[in-house]
Length: 278
Image 1 (cartoon, rainbow, N blue to C red):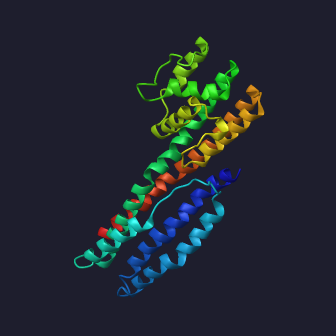
Image 2: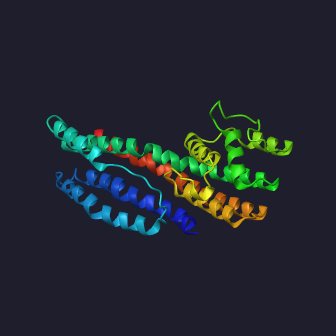
């Protein structure tokens, strides 16, 4: 529910950001032509005055995801400062600030890229993964067996990617057809997560003791719920279907929220670049 409300507010928040940091500065730059440029000094006040306000607005509106994205700001700050100092000797001040900021953002992105990809892959994979477990549950598989069979069938590695049953469980032809049609392989990060879970289950580790190495809280939530269901004993198919529908709804809202920001992200990147060098 909270993510649904936030998805509706995303457009308004992005419009505020564009007005305050793109269109308003551009208007002030035009007005400076008529007063000798004195108004341009006010542009330095806008980021300092409005950034904390916008941060509070976004923080209060956005639901907590508990995604664990780790980075070291020093790795990005130090090179950015060095580039800024070097650039100050031959670049205009605003160009120097832009280049230094770009270096900072690139180095920050490099640190979080794989973690963000992990979170994105979970959004694309969890509904299909849970749908597979539901189909396995319909023919009497335990969750542990279902997870292992799903990985064996959908793994992107040549060693494991096979429809052959390696554990001796009896798969129906109908189930195999469903798996062939719905699974051409999970994204890389989610495949690595399943590989880690598969190896632990195969070595005899109970599902509730399996270590989940992921940045995505949805992945952790999913396997936590699955471990609770395993401990409860009998798992009705209806419970798995409800869980699949619930997770599909969450991931759909996530995707809608992200899609609403794509256009604004492109504008936020290219408009400042154009203004800096025009």
